[in-house]
Image (tube, rainbow, N blue to C red):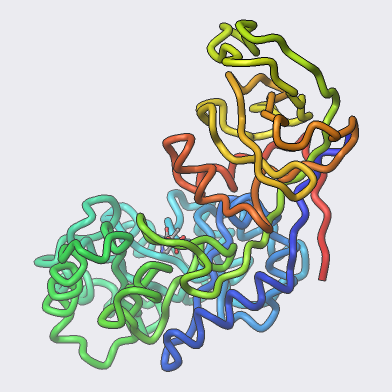
Length: 357
Ligand SMILES: *Cc1c(COP(=O)(O)O)cnc(C)c1O
């Protein structure tokens, strides 16, 4: 059976152009952390070779990009956490987010080439960043530090931008700009995908698109097509069996689905061992021969069962799409009580990745 994640690199480039059109005065820090949200970091980076900058979470991701020959600037979204990492930052010419005291200490103790810094301010998400009232002091420390490039950039991250009804976003933007009032000429960065598409107030010199590049809506209510985004990953498989199951019989582990009548049931070679979510409910849509049918019973490690009553002529080996073109991953995520980010990141190494341009 062939289980594949087909990655449409052209769609990814197109989605980046949507990010640029939505905020024409901004540049993009293209976010490709977590293996480019499960799509293959190096392949995506090579496809987006006109990016202004790439953003990753961890230093090993950045080093992997450099080892693949990528020379575009790379921003480490969590910065460094030891002297050794700081040496690697210099060696690979990485830009760093600085979000805590201990990074400031490390920066002051070390010597070498100057490092480009994005100072992260906690405007209300309360995850990473300095408190707004400490910004002036921290900037002072950075300016006196000869290990740091003098043009420190200022950034923050939005916690609730995925909900267009929630005015937390406007409050965060306010807190951020108030905290940096004395540094009005500094370059700034606020917007993630939801900021880019839904909150023009959050556009700054540097925006940070992530999920939208992969063709997924960043909003809690909404579809990728509302923003003209194209799906990048299509997860596909095939039928391994087609069976007739009698009324009253149950299907799958735990027998959670009981046939309300005689049924045609398809068994698809995909399961949580591939990253298909085990919590997907009966009724979750699946495309068999490009027609919608629905999941029945529990997801197993290697297989799922689907209702083929509407297409009884289906045969073994017929093609199946789990998400992607023709079936938005957002729908599967909703049916599995999760978000598309998690599904895309979770496709496992057993699945064959095929790239098309
Ligand atoms: C992941 C991340 C982003 C991108 O967020 P999306 O919702 O995927 O657009 C932007 N900024 C930071 C700091 C991030 O960690």
